[in-house]
Amino acid sequence: MTRFFFLVLLALLPATVWGEESPLTLQEALKLGISHNLAVKVEALSIPLATAAKVTEEAAFDPTLFATLSSTGSRTPLASTLTPAETLFSREEALSVGMEKRLQSGGNASLVLQQLQATAESTSLIDPEERSVLLLQLSQPLLRDRGAAATTLELQLAKSRQEQALLGYRDRARLLVSAIESACYDLAEAQAQVAAQQEGEHLAEELLGANRRRFEAGIIALGEVQQAETALAARTQQRVIVEQQRDLARQTLATLLGPPPGRAASMLTVADLAQLTPVAPADLAAAATRALRLRPDLEQQRLALEQQGLQLEQAQQALLPRLDLEATLGVNGLSGEGTGGYADGRGGSLGSMAVADGYQWSAGLTFSYPLGNRAARQKRVQRQQEQRQALLQLQQLETAIVSEVESSILRWQHGEARLAAAQRYAELARLSLAHEQARLDEGLSDTFRLIDFQQQMVDASVTQLTAAADLARAAAALRGATGDNLETFSIFLTSEREEL
Image (cartoon, rainbow, N blue to C red; front, side, top):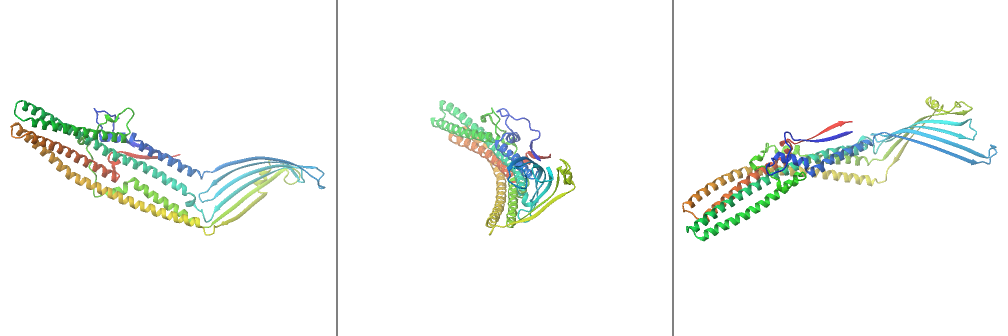
């Protein structure tokens, strides 16, 4: 029997808890997700289930030991001139012990030892008598259902489904890693946007305070104070909006991680985008080739196509007529009490059988063929269409994977250029704000212009954060599309086979 043990090996990762004072790194988040995500746990259970199904099919070829014990008796009234007895008494005791086995050739074989002890008021020279019989029985299909391919079909399918279960577990882990990676970048972006909006709100508060002092000194009009108050209210509203987005991002990530009991989603934070250090994707030119080689869901579909091929072979064989060979070979022996050559007492029948005092054999062929054989013909058509369907599904999945990879590559390539432009935009916006603030301090600008420059700086910061997060998400999507994200983050799902 084969047992599968699935190990998640994440080297050098410390125990992880949630807390505002210790933001999660990307690998810590992945470790939590692999360990606690319920969808992954559910998928992992399909592996022992598939293993049990395979062992069940293997057990169909295990030999079976059987035994029967019976006793019968009768007393029959007689009216015959051949015997003075008015009644006929008989008693039989029978014991059968044997073993039978289903053969991978498609047949069945059994070996049976029978012993019969009989007592009867008759003209037999031996009474009571004992008979022993050893029978070898064989049945074997010669056309339909012949051979290991037909007999072991369900076993082959069970083995294939076991491999599919392992691949399904790997695919679920691949999808989870990709989702957690993107969710971490979403939360990091939201956290940074909250900080950016808080900075903008703080600038508006400082401007409002300065304008109130200037108004009280008679330097500016009341309208500029009201402009600053309006800007502060607008930025407070924007901060509340991004805080909501942050809390939703926390909830999404917490759901993926499957949080340990007692840990609220509101406590969840991640490292900032710079500390998360997203890994750049591998060789882009070979990305599609890697995806077609590594993606577990694609390998699952290939196995499904193989399964359809096996079932089609069985359907082809079902078109043949049924011709079965039935054969029996046996030896028997007799002993008992009385007179005659076999009157050597009880227990002697085994010795008589051993020297083949008696023997028996039989052989025969059984033929059957349904006229028209419509059921088998339609089953073949069904299997042909199912195989065609599985092939098209495989081609469809290959096309979708290549498209997914190419789209992710485009996102990454454009994301690099976009981030560079956003960084330059943010730098210039801060320089422009500092310059305009200096002009206002010198009395060369006004509140309306400064508020506009402040908002440009906040917008530029948000744009830079979004570009950085989008680039990180593009890299995560590409790793997920190619199927090498588990290897990238040193997450190994391995199996050990122990033959018992």
